[in-house]
Length: 577
Image (tube, rainbow, N blue to C red; front, side, top):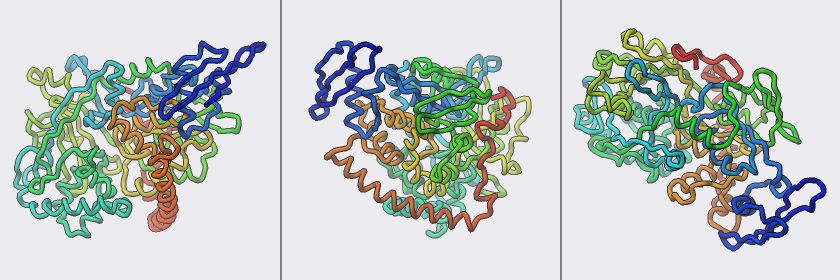
């Protein structure tokens, strides 16, 4: 029996409610408090049956004040989950931008096309169940597209829907690569420390196979850009071998031979605005955080104008460098974990220069959504484009009447000498947006991800965002739901088996918590994993110390601290965002 006390006005007798549990069910017997809702009963039951440590009985009459820093996918998901319990959580969102969405943005093409264009995030796969469930609850639908990709140019051209000279030429490498992936997957704990470029060289693969097939494919799936050669080899293996997340079945003749179903997002700005407005959270636009100071009796947050407010808990749903930059007293582990996440500045150009596309890509105008090319002088350098008129539904409707709309991403501003941006006709450019993106090289999975569990929930602080695991929209959404869950909000999608499975896995890996403690498999797995991750984290920190000594200071810290939350933002050429 769980006994809950609820605070009441002075002079009234304390009120109680008894909730008896049986297995995974709860039943209520009201004592002096018929007004307590079933929702409150279910929440208290959830708190008692999970690992949440919260004095909800004493504070149920006074909601916990929770600040979410940032309103991207992670912050929006956290607000959505916490907002389902307004009597328990008083939620505020502070964001430096004027609109929500984070790196998932929308720009107007009203003058040019009478519609809009999304950038930063284009779509996802049907396995993004947490994302799809949230959209569905808010009346949004996604539009299916079949993934058609054009890689390379000329003699290095290949696709996932047709034969090519390159795949025939590299057939031996393609045939044995599947065995290498299975080996990597079997010994993932070891290969997570090894960059894909090193592994492929050790196994004797040709430079052409690496540069023209493996690296562009990895960059496309994970947004790793010009850091792709340093991506953990264990991540590449999951593209083909993870039963829940894989997009393709391996083709030993062509590597890729399928056009799997993906989906395109609706208007991203409208989507995020709707979810946040319905969450009940107080949303403060253009309110960047200057500092966060944590004390025994609460958290004091100061905004850029000097205004101070007190909160019980804070969820950093912003980038890692921002969180570290505004924390007044980060712990050693927070410095180790967040300080290792690397960021790079990319330029997104929305344009209608079809001549440029034909010159630099193998463009199949009626088919391709994704196009990836490598630089002739340095094949490790990559550029990628989207034919949005074959991807985004609002542009597909008018593609026969208007010129196609393209987006080209120029990766890592420290490699601008390789960019072909100047070759796009100025009059064909619609928008230019700077985009700050984290890159999960092998260092990320070796030195950041294993330590995340040791900073979650410490001093009433939680971290959410794609950087906590892998660079996908779904990972960001799960991270926000997980932070809300740790605070006491029940997971909302237990009815969806795949969504639940992925969330449970994320919670176990990044927060080190099972859904329920007790005599069950999850608790056993959690205990075993805690020992393994403790050993892994110990060797991770030792390895990092060794690696940092062998690299120059500039290379070790490359990409860190360029655009911290309370510093200067990179100016946007067109919108000021």
